[in-house]
Image (cartoon, rainbow, N blue to C red; front, side):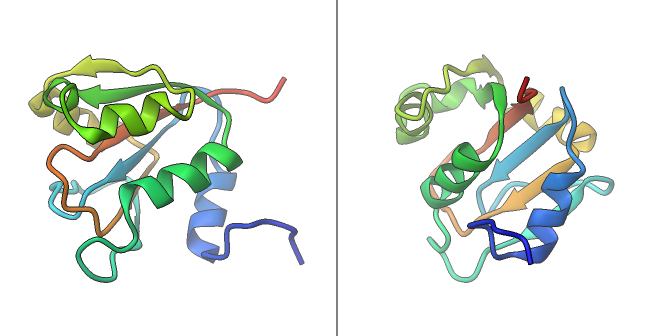
Length: 127
């Protein structure tokens, strides 16, 4: 048995396939999800799990080289949640962020309903 804090088997398995420069998206419950990426739908009800809860777990369990937010999130809580965890994001428009989704390795859908609560995490390496 693996010793990991992540209990969701599909999420753990998907993360194990990630390599350097792959992207993992944490998505709010309203983000349109394209065909292609592995989708891990964690949304239970509105607000659960939250963007913050999922970000915390991933930040502890992934090597994150950098992150990308929608420019529209600059004045909202998502930027502060990212920077307080050591992620200094780059910014693109929300439309550009949505255009990047088909190239993501994994999209994790949360129950978050805060506007623009989406982040692209760019995988780094542990060495």
